[in-house]
Amino acid sequence: MNQKSLVEKQIQESIALKQRVQEKFSAQIVQIAQVLSLCLKKKKKIFFCGNGGSAADAIHLAAELLVRLSPDSKRKALPAIALNTNVSTLTACANDFGFEQIFSRQIEALGQKGDFLFTLSTSGKSRNLIEAAKIARKKGMKVIGFLGNRGGGLSQYTDYAIIVPSPNTPRIQEVHIMLGHIVCDLIERELFEKGK
Image (tube, rainbow, N blue to C red; front, side, top):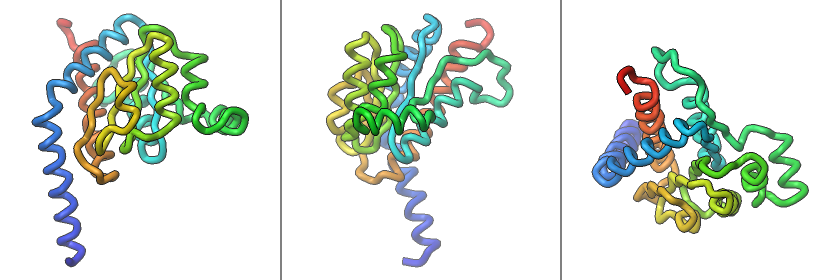
């Protein structure tokens, strides 16, 4: 297969997967945006976390809420926090307590009842995300999982899970960031459109 054919094949795979997700999860994405909007209306926070490429997506989505998604928006900042960003905290916790605790330790300190934990994982098997979800639920927080493949163990600890039906990590991540952008857009519309 030549390179142009490889490019076209991968684009078509991404389109096909996104169409499957559209058919299966559109209503659930609306529901997630609604519960997050309500959380923010109640002056609560959203914490984001993930590993690897999903860590970058967690940081990206937190920034879309904290700063803004739409370049035309003059809205106020929203309390969205990426748990991946503080290198001193991550390395100290990994060194002192183990890598499995890097997110749960932060949730233990910062999370409050009514807050949300938004996890991103292509496998759903990441121990540090599972531990964070466990602590979040003990604190009365709700957990969202943008997952892939079959959802892994993390799906057992989520209140709202979108499990992208694919074993292909890049395709899953493409869907996660697309859906994340849609959720952020719906939140901005719900909280800041005139007449709401």
